[in-house]
Amino acid sequence: MKKKKKILLVDDDQNLRKLLSNYLMSSGFLIHAVANIRSALAIVRKDSPDLIVSDIMMKDLNGYDLIRLLKLDNCFIHIPVIFLTAKGMTADRIKGYNLGCHAYLTKPFDPNELLAIINNIFFHTDASRDKSLLSNDKTNSKLIDSFAFTPREQNILILVIRGYMNKEIAISLNVSLRNVEKYISRLLNKTNSRNRIELIRLFIIDN
Image (cartoon, rainbow, N blue to C red; front, side, top):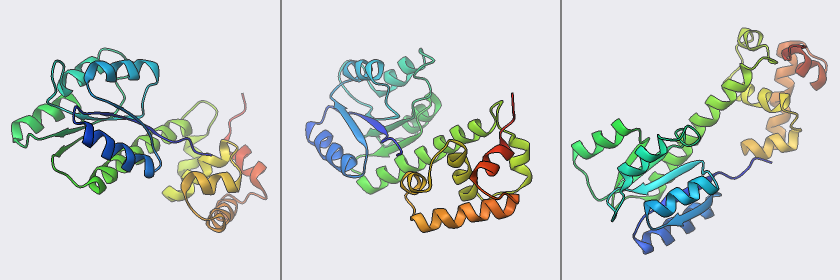
């Protein structure tokens, strides 16, 4: 089963932290919520999150400081950051993007928009990771490219190569079991494979 994504929420507004924590947890995420950057850095070191949602203007260290400090450690430089702030000036946005933030929401904002941004970021980071998987030493990525699979077919192929069964694939991609079976049949037909084992062997390079 696909692991839940971990999101770290950093904001000195207790009511906002509680509201967003409940909303994001109800959307299927694991949430850590803290009031300042120092506490956030402690969480990052202890349990590296998949994404950080942070206010910018806080006492002591601010959101800009958070990104600068994350960049000092190669283990954390990859963590996407979304800024929440009352500031709406163009110069502030430019500063955030230049430092490496992925998105910028001005308070007040619609939580649905934040959720859409989060899902979009995870979609692209997961796609990049899966592309890297297909490019590893044991996978014939050139052969995969030659079949011109659709993005959905390629996603399912990746999970088949990882050893996921149909039910697990359905849960992971949030699709019906019947749809998974349909795509597996397409993969078998396109590659002229008789079963999953042949399909996997076709794309795995022997050592």
